[in-house]
Image (cartoon, rainbow, N blue to C red; front, side):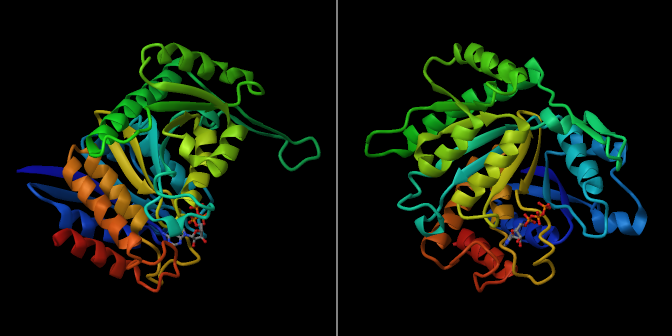
Length: 363
Ligand code: ATP
C-alpha cells in the first residue's frame, strides 16, 4: 500500500481550524493508500514565542515530501509579511513551485453573486505564474519618510519562467478537454480546449515577453483555441461572461488579483482552493483565504476551501478517483443546501462541516 508523506502547516488564526477538517476528510477518503503526516509549527504565533523562521534544512526536508498541506499565516502582533515570506516564499521559491493553480468552479447556483449564471457557466482554471514579477523583491525605498521619498518595485519576467507557465496552461487545457469528453455521455456540444493569456503588454512593454512566448508556444498546440486579453478587459469579462474561459494563464501580480475576483464568483473566500506546484515534483496546497483574525477561535470558519485544496492534493498525487469523490461529496452537500452557505454564517460549525463531508464519503 502506498503511503504518502505529507507536511502539514496549520499556521495562524483559522488556518489550524480548517486544516484539521481537511485532514479529517483526507482520512475519510483514503482507499488503497495511506498517509504519514509530518507537522510543522511555523506561524506568527510560533515566531512570537521563539523568534524562529523557517530554517534552510526544513526547506530541504520539504523537497523530500510528497506534498505539503497548508492553512494560513498572519498574526496581528507580527510585522506584516515577515513570517508569510519565510513560509510561503520558502515553499514557492525553495521548491520552485512555479504554477499557482486556482480552479474557479461554481458548485451550486445560489452561491454565485452573478445574475443567471449556473455551474455550467463558471468552471475555469487560472494559472498564476508563481515565482517572478513584482514578488521577486527587487526594489526598495530611498529617503524614507522625507519629502523626497522614492519607492521602486521592479517586475521581473524571464523567458524561461514565462514559457513554462504557458506550456503548463496548454497541457492542462488538453487534459480538461479529455476529461470533459469522458464525462459527457450524451454526446452534446462541448466546450473546446481554450487558453486565454492575460497581460498588459500595451502599457507594460516588458510584458511583450509574455505576448511573444504565448504566440510561439501556441504554435505547438494547434488543437487548442487561443486568446490574448489585457488584464482590465479580462476582469470585465470574468464578471460579464465567465463562460468564455477555460484555462487562463497570467503573471504573478495579475493572477493574485484575478483569482480573488474568481473566488467571489464561485461563492467567496470560504470555498476557494489552490495548489502551488512544480509539475511532476513538489506541491503545496492551501485555501486562498488568510488567517481571518476577525473570526478565528470561534469555530465558525468554512473549511471547504481547505477541504477542496486537500482534494487538489489527492489529484496531484495521482489519486484521481479519491479526488473526484471528495469534490462530488462537497458539491452534493452544497446543491442540497445541507451546507447552506460558505461563509461564517452557515449556522454550522467548522467541525460539523468537516464531519458532514467525511460522512458523505464513507457512505
Ligand atoms: P490575509 O492578509 O492573510 O489574506 P485578510 O484578513 O486580508 O488576511 P482573509 O483572512 O482571507 O483576508 O479574510 C477576508 C475576509 O473573509 C474576512 O472577513 C474573513 O472573516 C472572511 N473569511 C476568510 N476566510 C474565511 C472562511 N474560511 N470562512 C468564512 N469567512 C472567511
